[in-house]
Structures are given as structure tokens and as C-alpha cells.
Picture 1 (cartoon, rainbow, N blue to C red):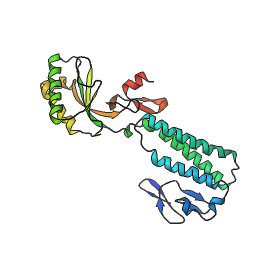
Picture 2: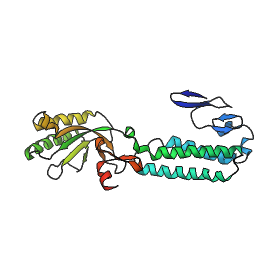
Picture 3: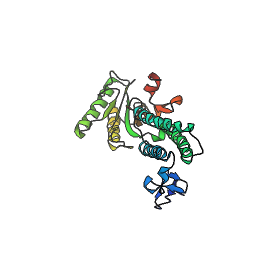
Picture 4: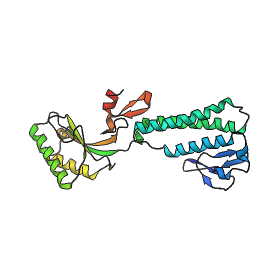
Length: 255
């Protein structure tokens, strides 16, 4: 066993392959796969059950490292909970048997995996950030709003770009307090198209300045895992009991 790049690496006792997955265990070593287990190992009591639980655990560790939404995470939690409960059944068996002890050990590892998946959205560093253009229309004269909207729409038409516009399908200073333009599918930070739009908006406003910054700004955006809409990352709020960060709207109206 050795450590490489922060991972505990195992060396298979049969084929000498180096691997980072949870190893299969037998009385005389660690093994990379069922094929490498010693002859007769699978004939031991509960060995087949152990291998089945371990292979499912390995699969879940591999598949459940990234989530885009709470629904994806919750589906994973259901599968992991079922596997955890399947392992728990063996706590009623005699712990003197080698593979019963290994299943008990796996139960604890599955529980740890469940907790990691449950807490996935409690770490903002896991959120994929992209750039947005934040436009606040409040207290901005109507003629200035119109000039900015016209300049941005003209640029988007010329460049043949179709952005996501938050809080409305179109830029609208009459019905909205603000709009945010972003290209969430591109996941770029910075995004040259957003920065070009920013320059267009600043020019249409009348030039840079402190007052301009109250109405036109570049924003770090992320997809809210609850509503799946792009929202300003700085407005995400932690729901402590659920171990997740969600946008301001979801934190206000869903919890």
C-alpha cells in the first residue's frame, strides 16, 4: 500500500496491479478484482454477498462524484441508502466470520459515502461558476434604460447570440427590477461575450463611474441546485439542516 497524489494506492496481492479503489479482502491480502481472489475464497461463508456489496460500493463511488441538481443527488442517496441497509442486515450474523467483519466495515464506508453525497451542495467550491452581466433598472431614467437595452439587443443580434436572461425572457426595465444576462451552457469565467456586452452597456449608459457601477456590473454566477436557474453566487444562502447552498429565491420561498 502506498500514497500517490493524496490517494491511498493498493497493490493487488495476485497481479501486482496498483489501484485506488476499495480493495477486495481475503485472509492473505488485498485484491483488485474478483478474478484475483485466491482459489476457494468465494466458497467461504458470506463471501459472495461481500463481493456484491463491495462492487456496488465501488460503482457508487465512481458514479456519484458530481451532481447538477438536488434531484440527481437525492436519487443517488436512495440507491446508497438501499445498499447501506443491505449491509446492515449482516449485523445480525456472527461477527466471528471473516466476511461478516468485512461487510461491517463496508457498512461504515457506505455510511460515509452517504454523508458525503448528502453534503455535496454544502460546499460552494463545487459549484461551477460562470460570468454574467447584472443590470439594475431601479432609479435609472427610462431613456437611459432604453439606450442600454437597445445597444445590448443590437449587439446580440449582430453576433447571433442567444443568452439566458434572468427574471424575464427579454430585457425589460418596465416590469423588472433587474435583469442578468449569462451563457450558463458555456461555463466560462471570464466570458469574452459577457465582457463585450458590459462595454456596450457602459457606453450606452454614458461612460464609467460610481453611479454606473450601481446599475451595471459583472457577476459571478452559478446554477442553483434547487430551481436550476442561473443566479448570482454571492446571493446563495446556506440551508444548514440540509447542508446545501441555494439561491436567494429558493431560500426564501422553498424553506
